[in-house]
Image (tube, rainbow, N blue to C red; front, top):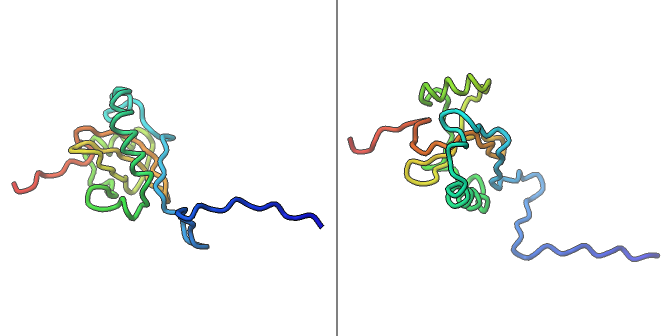
Length: 138
């Protein structure tokens, strides 16, 4: 009788989800990223993308969705978006109920469509225009 080959052991610090537990690790995709338009990715330099945005997305990859979601990173109802953003979604023939906003720093945001543990990145909003907020303490 031949011996079964040994399988590689998982590292001790590897997180193994429990059976039936959904994998909630943050993942992202540029599958639906808009290149043109008011918040298109063609408006960002490669240097800025690599230095600021890619680094931040890689940081998010080390986190689970429950760790990410909160005050600065959250879903926003399409109803609350700026009229220009709503119009752009219609032009793109997208009909989401909500978008997800990731805060990069200060006013900079990345907007996308969240489906399970994947954020399908749509827009880069450097001036917080997609869903502007009232300044605090005014």
